[in-house]
Length: 314
Image (cartoon, rainbow, N blue to C red; front, side):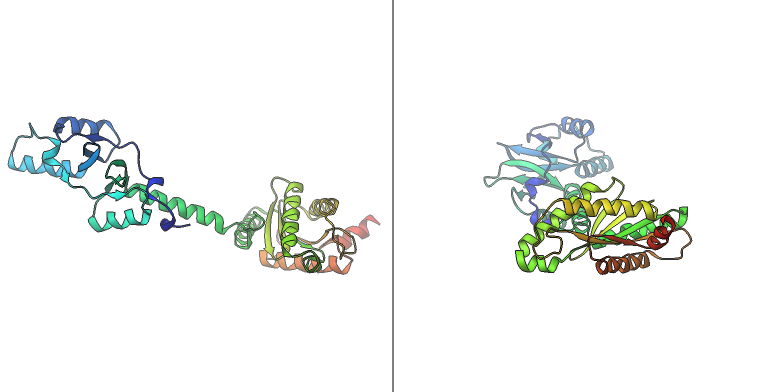
């Protein structure tokens, strides 16, 4: 998506003002003062024959004042820029930008194939379109195209921000890495299209199970990362257990898995105030815990401090 892909008709202004060549200067001034228009298009038989801009009027008034010439009796045809620079309806937005820059004009009448006036596009319209596209591109660059969730870049930005806040305000947050069990075997047996569908199902299931404050990102491949703000280890573990049960309960067949259906394993690490760990280290510890879950037989969550809690319960 860029300026080349957008057309003039998508961004032109429809609320333009027109006058006939015989319109008086006073009527033109009234139109410009009363409305929010930067120019007046002079038309004849619905075709632009001239343009009068605010700058044209300022120059006209200054020149007549300097020469002490009267303004009475001046008509649109006397002060307009004849044969205005126009841009064809349906032409690329970039073309309008190049014409505007090349001819140093602020407003361009938009005409159809027969030369009839269709609208006006100004430099502000072009710039607004450009910045809107940049905003859309930025949003797209933060989203994983397959799963419709935040991508690795968005994840890192969120983690950096969350970590700084946790340090500043002495708060907890938990990071979870989720990995689909035996996913390579699933792809090899069912095919990559089914693998993509399975990933979308799991991402949607996780999002439906999480709390509204939690965030989900694609970490890479079949690995997803969950950020649980202001969440203590034991509470985070219960959230993740609920997520894993929801995935298993979907009953998505996986004949190459020990469980017969799609399942996932998870590793959890919690940032505690004063622990001295950076956010990247939190993710690394979560990854180590994920490996422990796989060693324990998969379809479970492992987390730092889990053994101490288990011993306390016993």
